[in-house]
Image (cartoon, rainbow, N blue to C red):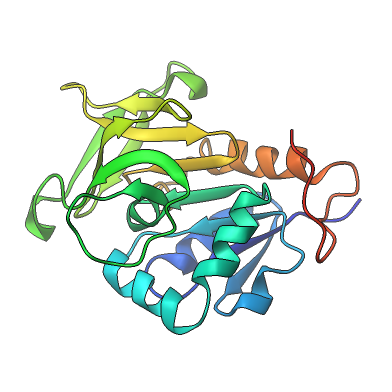
Length: 210
């Protein structure tokens, strides 16, 4: 059986930490910087960082449309923090390149500036009763979830901080510094499920709908 091959967008931000987490789970984690790096992937992670910078670099390196096509074709994608901003269909009045793939409305820097970053135990029902230690760094928040998506986790005040839409997962917080693999693990399982029994997507072949 082939080893899962998951790409991590490596233009800026916490891509090294995501790659380390995926490798702990037995996945071949590869950095993606150019459109040809998207070929043959079973999934893709868009890490946290500076969403404006990542968006501009995606445009500079010709990645916006190839990424949109890859996601539309059904390749699973997980966006964390800045990655969630880039996946959203609506980020308010902020002017920056986004993928617009996920039916969520996101507010950038929803909790304040860098000094207002915080850590909190949150309950993600799909992960069981044990809370997940979430790290929020200049974090966004989901203001509204459209009919195609669903909320996965909220803060005590009701703020939505995680959502899923079919093969797309997004969290406002950073899971990659934590030793807890309970978010990356299900994402890897989703990638395996969408890839099918061959364990690897064929270049140029659209994945089957699951």
